Amino acid sequence: MIFSDRADYFVDIFSANSFCPENARQELERKYSPILEITEKFNRRSVSFQLSKKEALHSWLKYKEAFSADLVNALLDDMSVTPGDTVMDPFMGSGTTALVCQMRGVNSIGYDIMPISGISIAAKANVMKYDIEEIEQMVREFSGLSMAENYSHIRLIGRMSG
Figure 1 (cartoon, rainbow, N blue to C red):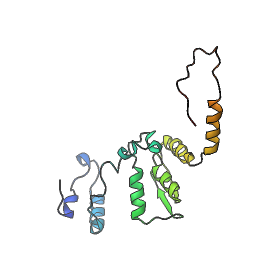
Figure 2: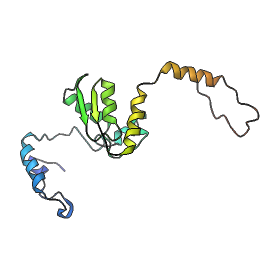
Figure 3: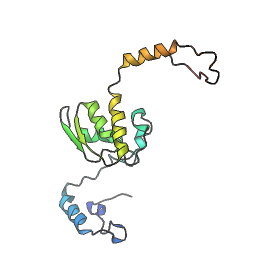
Figure 4: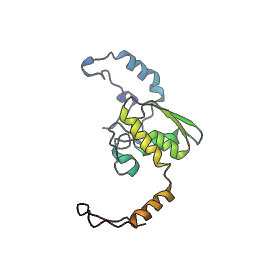
């Protein structure tokens, strides 16, 4: 569907079965319609979890309301956000915005009502704190271990190479 005019983007009735009054939403549409930008820049994949499915950092927790890191990066670029600036995210969800900001040296403040958000955000934030030398040392130590013969119920499937 191709929209040729800004007016094509406005609807008279948005609320299902007129559950909510429309006047406040319609007033906001009228107020902000002069700055509406029609663009092909964003799509269903970027404004959802879809682009995160193949990213190791963001794919381990499927959070259906999540934005992709690509979208967050594009918006930060569009708004000329630079290291040291602060971004507020009032619906942090799985913490994608906070993590992207952290990786770019941008401060972030946010909150979310869902308890799983705190767990997800803490796990993602700690990724940046891993000590690679410590992990490599652990791999070396584990690689040097041998399985005790009387532990026949445990099978060693594979070894990590280091």
